[in-house]
Length: 239
Image (cartoon, rainbow, N blue to C red; front, top):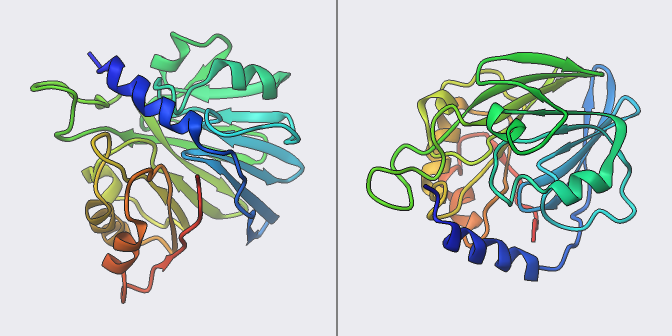
């Protein structure tokens, strides 16, 4: 089982962090502009085609932000799944996409498993694996079991955005193709080091990469490890 005491302390640290939105990131696509706003930790908002999509709305503040047309959830842990925040931002017709493990804890979910695809409004969504290879709360256990959670590739106007979720440098990540913008996690003991994340990013070579879900990690080390690759590393304040 997951170490609940450790996770409680982990989430308490986030609760102490001030919620301050980073400046929106803007991308041009064949369907028009897409604006992505980092919120906190692994939580972010995408606005495009007159619609609003949230990824893992579980950290930070949501006052003044628009209601969700769509929500993508990666996993069951409290820094990715917050029923009170979802209740605050959802509308009666909000579509929530998540893995089966999330559906067991949250009603009204459209289940998507690793390897499956769906379309929500103007966004094409593909669920991809996210899991630990070796790290866990105790011997023989992993923080994130293979198949339980989803990373996502979201495509809008021909541009492909990858959100890693909680994962180590798994083979499936290294094998990704044609990723325009990647959001890649790094933090111990739950996911991976900046160096491990950089190794994976080198393998699938997105045009742009943002470290996220990095609390306690030195993102400058990540950027240094990717120097000279031609990958545009963008460091932003998610806390």
